[in-house]
Length: 118
Image (cartoon, rainbow, N blue to C red; front, side, top):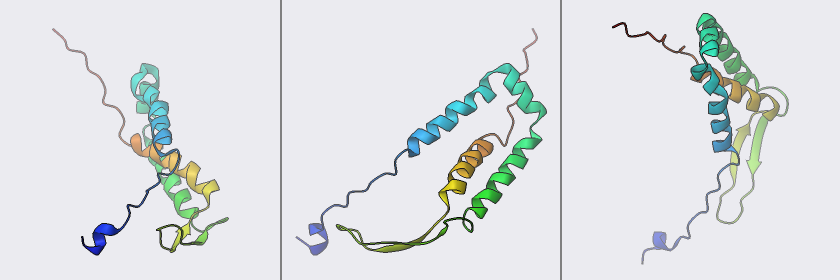
């Protein structure tokens, strides 16, 4: 057996809440697509989606330079090597990421439904 085959598998851990937050955003966004009054409101104010998207991008960029943002060193443990990285301030980053996801899902307004005339 070769040396590389004897390396034990690395247990990859998923960050908590990733799928949950994505599903929550989809469920929060559904009324804009399904409810007729919400669709009509969205179509009339579709330009605001671009403004909200731009603000979210600006705050995402801002989260890298304000508050507790900065370099991070993670010590080596188990079979994981030590790593260096950069961590944004979560007080700005997480809400901006939610607004960014919501706005990017709604950049294109829904198509107007037309009735078939027979």
